[in-house]
Length: 425
Image (tube, rainbow, N blue to C red):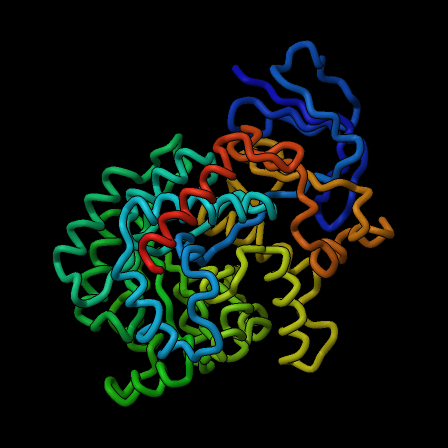
C-alpha cells in the first residue's frame, strides 16, 4: 500500500484556513486529517513538508474542448456563428488522432499547472483524448461530440466508447454522451441520444442557450424555447451538463432546477464571442447546480480556472449591480464541491477523510495571498494560477515544484507545434 503524508500543511476547509495539519493519503483516498502529528512518518512511502503551503481541493473544469489549444489565436474577434462556420469547423476537418492526442496533452499540461485536477470534455477522436488522460494522470469526464449527420453510426460509436473507456485508467475516466447543441442536433436525434444515455446509465453533456440568435432561431422553428422543448422530449432523464445557458427565461431556469441538471458557466468564452452574461446568481438563488468551465482555448484563450472564478464573481456583481452577489466562497464551491458532488458523487471537490485525494498545494508566501487574513477572498480575486506548486490526483503526485512528472512537457509542446505547422501552415 502506498502512503503519502503531507505534514504541517495549512488547510482551507469550510471557508476557514486551519494551520498545521497532517494529511495521510493511502493509495487513492484521504485516510485521515490530523492536527496532532500522530502518524509515524516511517510508515510512509513519501513525505511532503507542507509547512509553507496551503492545501485546497483540485479545481474542476466542467466544460472544455481540450485539444482546441491547437487553434489558440486562429479565430479572433468574431461572433459564435461565424467563428464556428468560417474558422473552427474547417480547422477541425483537418484534425487527426495524432494531432488530438498531442493537443490534449498540451491542454492538460496547462490545466495541471493552474491547479485543475478534473475536466469535462466534448470533442472528437475520443480515444486519443482518453489516452492523454491515462498517460497524464488527470481525471476526466469525456464525451464524443455528436451532430445530426453522425446519425446511428455516432450513437453506435458512443456506445462502443462507453463500453471501452468508462471507468478506465483506474476509474479516472467517465464517459457521457455529447450531443453538440439543439441547433446541430434535431429533436428526434436528441431523443435517441437521451434514450441511449439512460440505457447506459450515464449522463449527457450539451451546449444550449448560448446566443440570442440560437434561441430565436430555435423558437422560430419549434415554437418553444430550447430547454422547454428538451424537457418535453424527456431529454433530462439522465444527469446533464448544460454548457453556457446565457439566454434563459424563468420557465427554463425552473425546468433545470426540477430535473436537477447542472449549468456550466463559461464567462471568458461568453464574453469573447459576444454571447452575453449568463444570469448565474438568479439560477443559484433558484436552487440550481451551477459550476464553471473554461470552454476551449480557441474561444477563451486560456484554460485557467482561477481566472474563470474571478470573472464569474465580477460578472455576477456587474449583472446584478450588487457588490454582495456571488461571494468568493460561493464561486469556490462552484469549482470544487458542487461539481464534485454532481459528477463524482461527492468523492472529489473537498479535502475530507474518505474522499479521493485530488488536491493542490499553493505557497503561503506568494504575494497573491498577502495578507493572510483574507485567503478565501484572495484565492478568487488575486491568485493567477501560476502560483500552484504541487498537484496530487488520485493519490499520486502529478506535479511537484511546478514540474509535471508524468510526461515531458517540452517534448509534447514541440511535437504539437510541429504537427500544427505541418497541418495548417
